[in-house]
Image 1: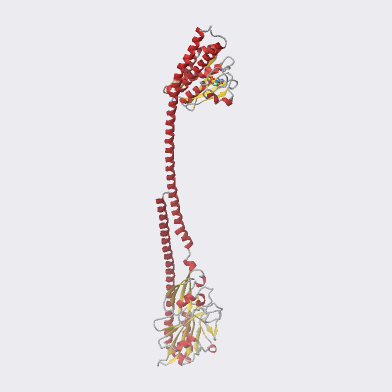
Image 2: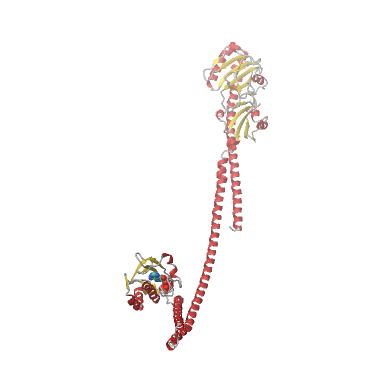
Length: 580
Ligand code: ADP
């Protein structure tokens, strides 16, 4: 891979990683914001419901405090029974009423209507009426101006100074009652019960959850694992919001505004829901608080991490891998092609040089053999002359020496002639063409007819021989050399069979004889120049005949080899291309 490619890929990786990371982070922050927005909306809705709940309570208490019978009853107790009947009807009509009571200025109950559950209201027995002067709602109410209404936060019901068990959650409203002449004469108090402002709060645990807090941080409503009404009942610590979430409580406590704070635990949202009905209200602070824990805020981070970062990164890496692989592969291919070209041109150069040196060698052999023949001929001619003209004067050893000289020069001439023939195969041969091998075979028999007669050899082609791609003269020479050998290396009447079959674009010839055979270990040696397996006294020859055969076959693109005959003798095989 080139340096430029590497830098480009590195930049691509870095830019894409940073880009993916940025997009992912921004989208993750947006998801969190949306979650906070959604919870905030839910909180607003709950706060609105709560405010809507308080509104009719204020209207009711206003009606009761200005009701003439209520005023009369606080002045004249004989009106009480009649008022009681009317209040019973009022209590029955509205679902959430728990109690309606009249207190005189000393805090003593003058009348109480109880509504147990949703059953018929009943008038409390006069003997069971209580003194409520020490209750905070009485004390608050006594301080109200004529138009003001007291609305309590969510509270627990108490009877005879004791918190009623099981807890009964109530909300109280109180207003002072004045005589027609404007004298304060008492207080009317209404209790409303079972106010489940956060109906699903107890079920919500790890999810974002909502809680209702009093002004001192006591849990009024919320999930079950928070102890409720800590300021009223003895509950073991931690029991208030501030104990659980000190950081968040610091931000919420005393705040009269809505807010949001992020802590190590998660995001807290709150609404100040101090009961207010127009301006004429005196209520104690209550807070509606929602917690969105970090687990929820970070939910999906893992999956999104995978989707948002790992998968795109893996994709980028894969892309880089593919590009790098492709670049490396192309580099490699180019390098290989260059190498191949180099090798091919080196080979072509070597072949050229080989051809040139072969040509030179052939020329040298040709010239040398040709020039050597002349002095040899003279030696042999003059040897013969010496013998015929001075034969009588020469005797004994001298005559024998003369014979050896003549014989050796003849033999040398034969060797040179063969060498000359061998060296001329390529240079003097004709261009390859279609050759009738049957004709070449017959020509060869004609050339050596006297030898065939001498040996009484039986030679035949068992199939008609085909047309092949070669040199006609050399084909004749090829048959001739092989048949002469078959007759020479045979101790009985020679029997020679020639066949040819077509095999994959080549004609496969066989020349089989019944001669002395060739051992397999010499099957390659016999095709080398001047290699012979016998002495001249056993069989005459120069050892070049088969080398010439090999060169002829190879010139036309074929091969030659020898095998032992099935029963006796040798089988010479050679292949010559068929005519295309
Ligand atoms: P040579 O002039 O000796 O015949 P060749 O090259 O023709 O030379 O043969 C090489 C050697 O191969 C021979 O010396 C001989 O030993 C052996 N040879 C060749 N043809 C035959 C054959 N048909 N049968 C047995 N031996 C053979």
